[in-house]
Structures are given as structure tokens and as C-alpha cells.
Length: 215
Ligand code: AP5
Ligand code: MG
Image (cartoon, rainbow, N blue to C red; front, side, top):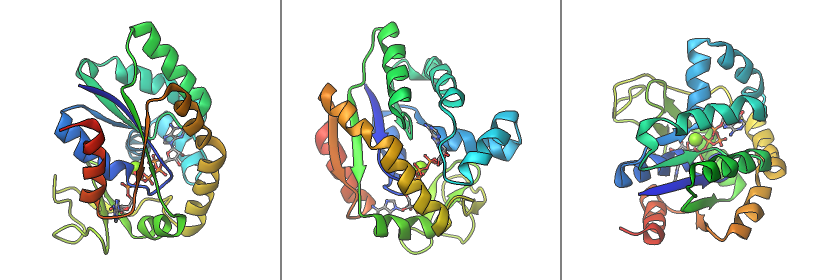
């Protein structure tokens, strides 16, 4: 059983690794980005608000994020652990998560920080495609779906995210540096952070992660 957080800049491979980790350790994968994209697609009030920020590569305001996540963590399937992907993303969110966990009498086991060279990550994101139905990530060169435009896992439509243009990606890097990178020092103090390099194939990165978490 693990309670995990995946931290890292846009395109580091959080979503790619999350699918593998969630399957191996049988814990739910909770991606705030995926939850927002689902709301955008369904045209909910939350989706309409979130879209304004996401399309510019800015963070959605903390007050719209924290309750969404803590409600999700209250669900029965999180009893035996969870994997948070893309949350927390600000020190405020991390403090709110800590308060929530403390009240529940539980703690994070590990924070996995995946880092990588910005130019490599940019290339990954510009070529990225995602399944609209299940969120599985692909890449036009590195990891194309077996049949163009169709998800290998669920048969859903594979599309390009609206925030995967070069201009927006460059802003997302800046937002990451300003608002999310301070979390590395925050979790360094709690001594439960591990650092993983995103260079190498997804399987190589996954092997580094499980070598720390245990088989
Ligand atoms: P979110 O969806 O979380 O986006 P992100 O953090 O920018 O990260 P990405 O999903 O772009 O990258 P990833 O690390 O998951 O990489 P992936 O595995 O896909 O957030 C989007 C937006 O939502 C935010 O900008 C914000 O507006 C809002 N939001 C979300 N959470 C929020 C929060 N907590 N607070 C406020 N706002 C929030 O991989 C990328 C590509 O590379 C893929 O094509 C993949 O196939 C390929 N790839 C992956 N690994 C490898 C490898 N090892 N080698 C080669 N290619 C690889
Ligand atoms: Mg992702």
C-alpha cells in the first residue's frame, strides 16, 4: 500500500509513469489535470472556469482544486493508498493536503520528483496525443497508438491537448518554476522525496521508480 505524490515539470512523464505505478501497486491514479479536462469536455461550471486558466498555461486557482482532491481522497477506493499526479502544485495546496492527511491520521509514503531537460520535454509535449476517454498518453514519434487516432487501451479518440502549443508550454515551464518548484524544498524537509531523471525510455524511468518503492 502506498500514498504517493508525483511531482515534476510539464512533460516529465508523470501521467505515463502514473499509469504503470497505479497498475503495479493497485492504487487509484488521481490526476487533477485529467479531472479538469473531463470537466472541460462535459462543459460543467468547473470546466468552464478551469479552461480559462488551462488554455493560457496558468494554474487553476487553489480554491477550485483543494476541495476537489480532498473529496476524491474520501472515496472508498483510496482506503488502501493513492497516487496523486499534478497535485499539490503550490505550497498552499501542499499545506492543505498535509492538514487533510493529519486529520485522517495518515501520511504520504513518498513524493516522486521527476525532472528533465526543458527542450526535451518541450519536444515531448508538442508531439503528445492523449485519449479523450481514458487519458492515456501517446506521442506521435515515441509512442504512437497502434492505430492512428485510436486509443490502444479503450478505443477512445486520441487528440492533441489545447495547452500543448509551444507558446503555452513555455509559459507552463515558467509557472512550474515559480509556483511548483518550491515544493521540492518543502518535501525535502519532510525527508520523503525521491528524485528521478526522466531521461531514458518510460520503462527505464519506471524501473528507477520501483527500485525505490520496492517490488
Ligand atoms: P496537467 O495535466 O497536470 O499537466 P502538466 O503538469 O503540465 O503535465 P503534463 O500532463 O503536460 O505532463 P506529464 O508529466 O503528465 O507527461 P506525460 O506522461 O503526459 O495540468 C494541466 C493544467 O491543468 C495545468 O496547466 C493547470 O492549468 C491545471 N491544473 C492541473 N492540476 C492543477 C493543480 N493541482 N493546481 C492548479 N492547476 C492545476 O508525457 C508527456 C509526453 O512525453 C507524452 O507524449 C508521452 O508519451 C511522452 N513521454 C513520457 N515519458 C517519456 C519517456 N521516458 N521518453 C520519451 N517520451 C516520453
Ligand atoms: Mg499529465
